[in-house]
Length: 179
Image (cartoon, rainbow, N blue to C red):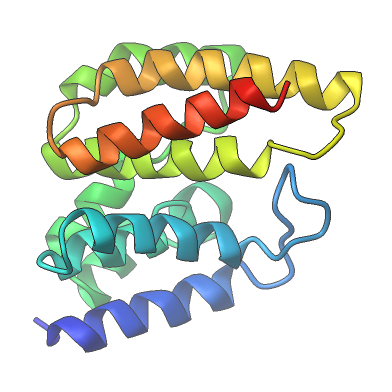
């Protein structure tokens, strides 16, 4: 296996290349890589840098879902655990959005400890991206809808990292205060 710094650095590079040109939902044309960096940083902070594979998976958590990256490629380049974590965080994009959302809520409690942490970090980042100064009615509705759903998903992921749980709760409070 790669040394920790290389593992994370190579995961970040692959994520940047595979998501090149993609924009983030919720923040205008902000590059999508900013979301991946935020998720990876939340995981690094939550674990005090002690789990390089988790941080690498944070960088890569959307690569199978959003690009032509495969589980096999991730396992070969990084590790079986990194690949498994990414697969656990991957939605089946052939399903309608409402079904994907329902499955995230149902499946959250069944996920591995690491995948639960990635899910919480992902939801923190995505709620933060939806907080706007002076939001439009549509932005308000999206924030309320997404935050309510994210709370249901995170309810099944809690307990693995108190700092991440508190950071999520604080982000939800911030979101509600912005409405």
